[in-house]
Image (cartoon, rainbow, N blue to C red; front, side, top):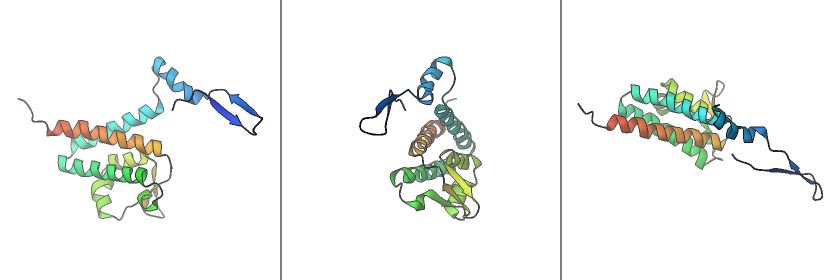
Length: 157
């Protein structure tokens, strides 16, 4: 999200430069000062939570969890106007067996903007932020590659 200049125009004649937003330029300064960017922090949190989960369950279950999370997140990104992909029913057997039974998998969905809505008995995408969903999907894919790749390697003695 690098923006060198922002422009604000209220009419064709009235165009003035707006000073850079500190929230946009701050991450650049934060890198040099050792302070972590919130986006990078969220990515690492998802990697950590999911990595712990995938390392603690059988690889077949881990693959089912990751595959389901990837499908959910990819559907939201690729078909943003399809409401059915923004509502995950807790009564669904597939959701129960592949996601809901693992708090870490639910945490991944929460990180992407899903919230539990008791009246619907479903997790609904309440935050419309495709960039965030893409970031979480990337973290899921990267963690899957690292953890499941390591699990499938033969152990050397």
